[in-house]
Image 1 (tube, helix red, strand yellow):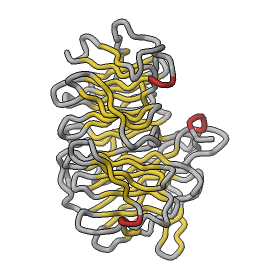
Image 2 (tube, helix red, strand yellow):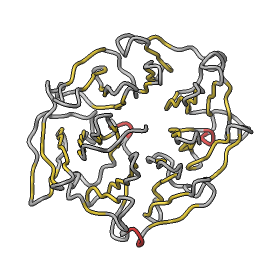
Image 3 (tube, helix red, strand yellow):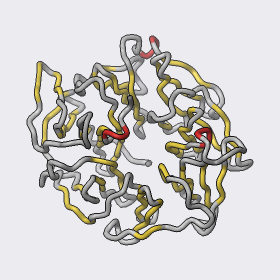
Length: 350
């Protein structure tokens, strides 16, 4: 997204779950503040707005409250600047100014994607579904010759090329969904774990990076081949491109951040140089101004292009033993929205 960062605000949403059953969320609960750190406990929904000038978080509440037995799944920004999110109850739209939500559909999917034409996509155990009326109704999207895999994520580039990350390969359509071809990492049984794709990310330059069983791979659209990267241990964590097309990821074994050059050929490991030696990083995000947000057991950290090291934003996410999902939404108003939530119990790491 080519959006500005003018209002200098971050909206942080944390959705946490139970370790035994599906996430149970108490919406509108008060936060527990200790000093200048805000701690979030299990079974709580907390929303806070960050002001860059004061470097403080102000707790706010989403209205009306989502049902206590509901759980968060995904969030997406439409090309026209409308924020939508999907829960275990359906699809909602969120007003960025007054933080009011409105349910628009009872459709329950695993995720949400909105293409440049404002068409909605969501995946379920029964395959891919598509909506042409802004998420109000969904119909199954049939992919000719392909029906035995679960679609994990959808990416559509500005030219209309569709990339579907699945459990048995990367599905690509060069004719806007009329026909598809499946590309495998290795020419063997498509059902093999070695052809399992988790999620794909597209840079502004058109480079496609996918998290897979082998770690992060770069897909070459010209010769339809995959190339391995040094991000071998980032199979299910977030990766991100900056405005220059450089790829970022978290390397678990070394507990560091790895960044590529603009050609995605050479990678460099950053740890002490960026002040990460005492942090255990679980995830990261990069905004359109190339600000890097790193998530650690110790809290949320920020590194701007003009700073040498990460700065502690004094926002501690609890419980520390859980790995949240995170997603960055940059609104046309200039606000930066940051969402974090926990997988349902079935998806939690052992």
